[in-house]
Image (cartoon, rainbow, N blue to C red; front, side, top):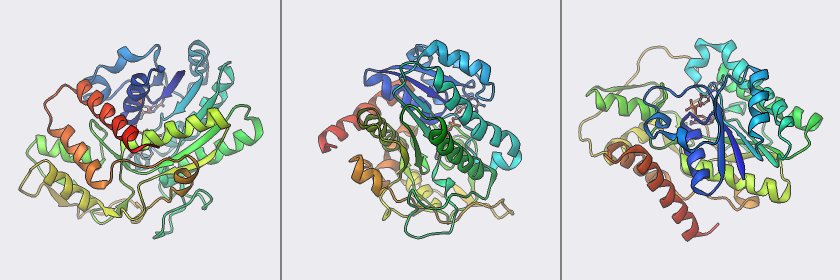
Length: 341
Ligand SMILES: NC(=O)c1ccc[n+]([C@@H]2O[C@H](COP(=O)([O-])OP(=O)(O)OC[C@H]3O[C@@H](n4cnc5c(N)ncnc54)[C@H](O)[C@@H]3O)[C@@H](O)[C@H]2O)c1
């Protein structure tokens, strides 16, 4: 199967593309250039792609040309401006990329003659946050306070409208939580901030240590996406799907930081609480993924402890990045096959 992954130079896109490739698929990508020191660059992933286009998804003409050339059978749309704090600095750009960019990708899908499925990635942050203690379900009201969350909710609604109005092949929306894993190099994310602080012998400044988030290992999240795509192709399913950890896994930012520190075998404290005034971020956010568990037979294979352990193992290993990625993907697939789906 030929997959087009938008956002293939990013964190999830790098893991997704390599996992698909190792499972025998052909993969092409459309994104901006990778960040310096990104996993994409360090693992030299460009060589796994049939087409590696560096295009801004706001440029509909160039996007259409690339999709015409690639002729994908499956599109996984990950490309986005995905950071909350950046969205406060660049709100218009965030809306343009996340909402209009998504519509451009959907429009360009009309040019893929053999298309079987399109998966649009939004986020757990699309839900109107009510600090609900039980986890949001797919039919809950959408909202979004900060520009990132609102732009993703807008992308989600725009996709739903596009599907109802123009959809010909199955399109689904995946909403996942905060992923962790090896090789994330984004600014303003907990694990990358910790890794940078450790390497500089400094303390990481943590903004919301008490905030509860649905932490999930990146491979569990991506396995959710691929399980959904399989059912889209076989049964033609579409709609909206949550992929989060078990809702009794309630862990704060501080717990994540402490566990990561322990797993890296670091004895002294490596973080301090940020006491400055911060822009709004929700305090309590959990996802209910019962729909995916029941209807796709999807489950996560790494609990919170294992997810942090795999992330710490990555951070402390001296092995080359591509080898580490391949090892962890193979280990994950073995775990999946042993436990069954
Ligand atoms: N990482 C998380 O915890 C998390 C949680 C929920 C949802 N998501 C969603 O998953 C997706 C991937 O996130 P990530 O963590 O891999 O982000 P990332 O920042 O690592 O990667 C973003 C990718 O999008 C591309 N991109 C950005 N702007 C673009 C543009 N204008 N045109 C073309 N490409 C562009 C980048 O080049 C990069 O390849 C995003 O849609 C994000 O909203 C991520």
